[in-house]
Amino acid sequence: MQPIYRDEEAKLRRRYRIILLVMLIGLIGSALFSFWVGYYPLTPSQVVKAFLSRLGYQGDIIPQAVTIFWSIRLPRILSAIFIGASLSVAGSTYQGMFRNPLVSPDILGVSSGASLGAAFAILNGSPNWLVQLSAFVGGIAAVALSYIISRKSRHSQTLSLVLTGSMVMALCNAGVTMIKYVSDPNDVLQQITFWLMGSLTKVTMESFSWSVLPMLVGLGIIFLLRWRINALTLEEEEAKSLGIHIRRYRLAFIVASTLLSAASVCLGGLIGWVGLMVPHMGRALVGPDYKRLIPACAMLGATYLVLMDDIARSLLSLELPIGVVTSIMGAPFFVYLIIKKKED
Amino acid sequence: MLLEIENLRGGYGGEDIVKDISCRADAGEILCLVGPNGCGKTTLFRLMLGHLTATGGSIRIDGQDALSLSPKALANLVAYIPQHHAPVFAYTVLDMVIMGRASHFSAFDAPKAVDRDAAFDALEKLNIAHFANRKYTALSGGQRQMVLIARAICQSAKMFIMDEPGASLDYANQQLLMEVVADLAARGYCIVMSTHSPEHPASIGHKVLLMKEGRVAAFGAPEAVITPEILEKVYDIEMDVATVQDRYGTAHTICLPVRPPKATYTKN
Image (cartoon, rainbow over all chains, first blue to last red; front, side, top):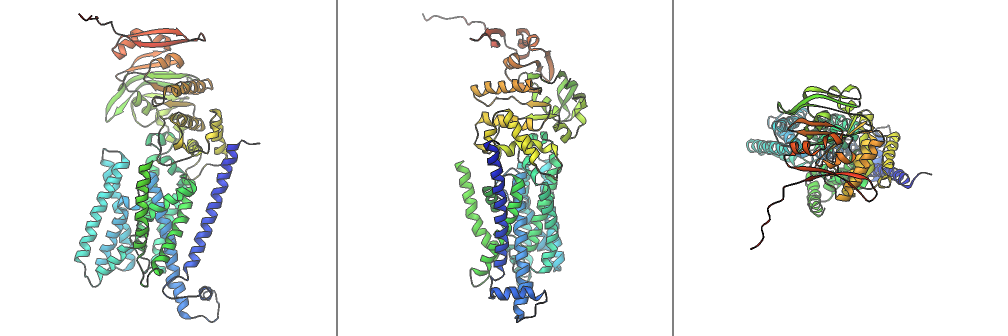
C-alpha cells in the first residue's frame, strides 16, 4: 500500500486533468454559442445550415447567414480565441520571468511599440499587410530597446527591465499621440483611434491568417519549454545552480511572449488586462506550476475573450469595443489584487 | 578527493577578491568556511557554482574541471542549498523539490513519474514526505530549509554548497539543521558550508578553511585550526577555546571571545 501523500498527489493530478477537460468543453461551448450572438439574429438551425453550406449542403439557406457565418463571425471567434490565449500565455510567462505577479504584456512596452508601428503605417496609407508588419516591428523594437538598455543598468535585471519597459511605453505613447495629432480627422484619425480602442469588429479571415502564424510559433515555444519557467521564478543564483542556462531561456521566453503580444495587437488593437487577469485565475484553479498553468491559461484566456466579445457585441444596441469591456472587468480585478497583496 | 581547489583566484570587475585559495574535501566530509564578513566566502561559493569566472587556479570536482563545465553538467555534481526564502508563487513542496530534476532531462521535457519518485524519495529520506502536497510558502523557516535540502538530494549531486545554513532560523531549528547536515555527510555527501560561528566546524566539521581578506588563514582539521592563536589572528579579538562535557558525557568545543577584566570602581 502506498502512503497517503502519494495518493493525495495522484488525486491532484487527476483533478488537474478533469479541470483541463472542463476548460476545453467550456471553450468549445462558448465558441459555438458565439455563432448566434450578434446584431443580425440567426437561429441555431440557420447557423448549422450556414456551416454545412460549405460542405455541399443544398437546403433552404438565406445567403446572409452564410456570409455572416463564414466572413464575420468565424474570423471574429477565431481571433478572440487566439488573442485571448496569446495574451494570457504571454502574461503568465512575463509574470514568471520577472517574478512579479502584477506584470502583464504591456510592461515591456510591446503593446505600445506595436501600436506606434501600426499608427505610423496607417498614417502613411499603407496596405493592411504593411500595417501588420509595421506593428510587429514596432513591438519587437520596443522590447529590444527595453532589454538592451536594462542590460546597461546596474540595478537588478528584473527591476531595470520593468523600469526601462515603462520608459519605452511612455515614449511610444507620445509617438502615437503625435501621429494622431497630425493625421486627418475625417479618415486616418478615426482608423487609428478605433484600432487603439481594441476591437474585433474589423477582423477578416485575411487579417487573422496574418497574425495566427506568429501566435502559433510563440505558443509552441512557450508550451514546449514551459516547465523551465518555474526555475526562472526562483532567485537567479538558485536557478543557475539547478543547471538552468538562465540568459538563454529568458531570451527565448521574451521573444516568444513578444511575438504573442505584438501579433495580438496587430489583430485586435489594445485589448488590456487579459494578460494580467487570466494567469491569476489559472493559478487559483491549477496552482502555480507552469507545466499545468500554461495549458490552463491558454484555454481560460481563449474562453474569457470569446465571452467578453459576446458581451461587447450584444450588451448595447451599438457594438462596444472589446478593449472597453476587458478594461471594465480588469480594473476592479487589479484593485482586488493590490488589496489582497496587502493582506498577505 | 571529491573536491580539489588549487590556487583559485577570482572576483568582480577585474579585481580579485579570492586570492590563491587551495583546499580539498572528500565524500562524506563537511568542509566549513569560516571568516569575518568580506573575507571572500560568498565569492568562493560563486566561483564553485560557476556564477563567477575564475581568473586563475583550478577547481576539480570528482576529477572534472569544474570551471569549464556547462551549467547542466555542473548541476549534476554540485547542488546549492540557499537559505530558506519566500518564492513569488505558492508552489507545493513537491513542485519545489522536483525542480531539482531540471538537469536530468532535456529542455523540452517536463518531470515524469521517475522524477516524482525521486522527489518523494528525497522527502522520505528527511522524514518530511507528509508535507509533499502542502504549499511551500505556508511552511515555517526550518521546514522550508529542509525542503531545499530535499531538492538538493533530488538533484543527485555529490556535493552540497550551503550558505550559512540556519542563519535565519531560531536556536532549536539551527541545532536540528546541524544534525541533518551531519547526517547527510554520514550518507556520503560532501558538504561545503559557510558559517559565522567557529564552533560549527569544531562540533560537526571534518575540515575547516579559515579565510581572511580573500586568502587562506589556515586549513586543516578543526583541532588544528580552531585554536586561540589562529582565531585571534583572523578576528583580531582575544579568544579562548574550551572543551566542555554535556550531561551525557559528549565533549563540545566552544569558542569564547574574552577581554581583560575592567578595573572596578567602587562608589565612594
